[in-house]
Amino acid sequence: MSSSKKPVIVYGASGYTGRLVCEYLREYGIPFIAAGRSAEKLNDAMKSHVPGIETASFEVVEVQHTTEALTKLFSGASVVLNTVGPFAKFGHEVVQACLAAKCHYTDTTGEQDWLITLEREYGAQFASAGLLLSPGLAQMYTTGEIAAQLCLEEPGLDTLDIAVFWGGSPTIASTQTILVNAATSKAYYLEQKQYVEWPADAGLYQVAIPGQHELALALPWGGTSHPVWFKRDPRVANVKVLGGVFNRPLMLGVPQIVAAALKATEGMNDDDRYAALAQTAASVMNTMPPRENPRLNRSLDSVYASGPMGRAHCVIHGHCNYKQTGLMQAFAAYSLLQQPPRRAGFASGCQAFGHRELLGALKTFGLVMDPVLTRS
Image (cartoon, rainbow, N blue to C red; front, side):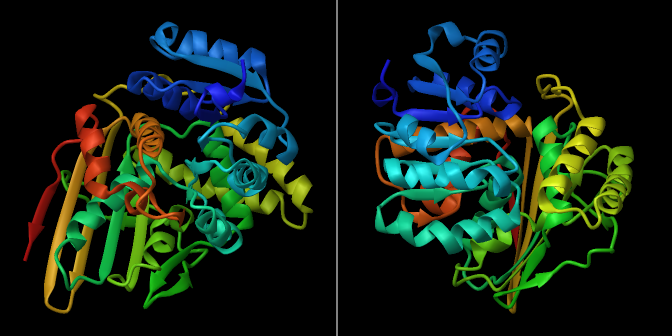
């Protein structure tokens, strides 16, 4: 079957997040191609891990990870939803193929350096073509951005203090991305419209988050997407973000794992360092996490917004952060198949689709509660 008959391509569909994207594409009734490097893994993932797949219109396509092969696959499609990371290592071919095939691009990255690279190297080209380039469309970034945008509906606020927390463990791919990103990239926050590097040796931060008495443990988590997205927002001058999991013992172990990985790969060339980090990641997490349980896999996004004469605080309680990610990816495709994005070129999910529209999708599927917004 020709790829032109399927408007959406999920690249990396056999992974944990990719499966969820396919699940929600099915719920939206969107035909799609499940693409990746192994047809065997893709077929197994679709049949065993995507509920209701027998009612979906889809096909499985094995493809080599080259710009040429991906361009051939993407030609005739409209939207590519990319879940193959680390994105700084594997993303360029996918983005270049999207440009060549004239497809909108989204991904689920948590790599701040990848966002900065995308904006610098590809943003203008996508904008000129009228195409969307939207990395980091995921719970860890977009749900918090929704909370920030709700705060910013009140004029006069220019500083964002964001905390993002979730329950559960990172996936295999997320664990690898965390280690690779920590070893090869700096993390930045935004101060007076300039990127400022987080202290590399600061360790864990203690954070007071709504809804619990015990202080939570957090990290800059690579800097996150928010400082990059808001750098071009004329309302915002300062952005700091901390995040973590509710599991305190797991958080206590993260700095040690990262420090050991950095020491073990010191002085290596890029290829050897990546191979060593991938091996370390596999020793930490080498099995797929179980399907999320709403009673266990909670999420919390808290944003304090402030200005010289005002303050706002928005909290969004939810559950199943990977499901939130899968849904938002599917909603992006659903929207793009019907109308152009609000902003072409490099744009966040909220900038491309509207923060209230994304919130509506999350609430429709029962993944978040009504935001709690207070102003003073």
